[in-house]
Amino acid sequence: MIIKGKVWRFGDDISTDHIIPGRFYHLRSNLDELKKHVFDDIAPGFYKRISKGDIIVGGSNFGLGSSREHAPLIIKMAGIDAIVAKSFARIFYRNAINVGLAAIICDVDDAQEGDIVEIRVDEGILLNVTKKTEKRFSPLPKIMMDILKEEGLDKYIKKYGRFNI
Image 1 (cartoon, helix red, strand yellow):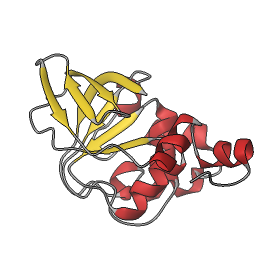
Image 2 (tube, one colour; image 1 turned 90 degrees about the vertical axis):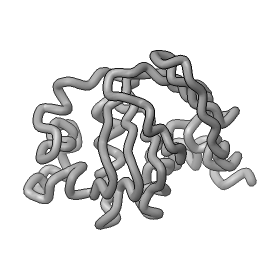
Image 3 (cartoon, helix red, strand yellow; image 1 turned 135 degrees about the vertical axis):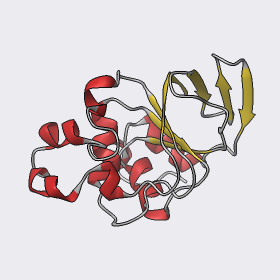
């Protein structure tokens, strides 16, 4: 599995409230509208600037706060294919995988907004195509890779009916 796209940078301690501000909670049953407000408070107009396949690079503790599944889901629905961060809040990390959004733990402080990166998820390699640098990360466990390949836990279960560990 290879994911390649343009980098959008965010810092440390990005909460689920940063991802989807609470004032849009009423839109949780209208995900097509909700995704238009992703990161509204910290990056106004973000949804209009991203392209399908872009990649978020974050710092430590990405996705802290409430366990809203909507946070990683609307990031994915907005067109982001992966988030790379130094660390993730545990619940956000699993919610991301479960909705089919790659969550990669890797320190990529050298990646600048606008750089093009290529993530070789199966191999545990992140290439910064712009800077011609390479970083290694621990590949995801097989079950997580299988869920990502099926584009989410719901599709995985519909296809296999159970976990194939």
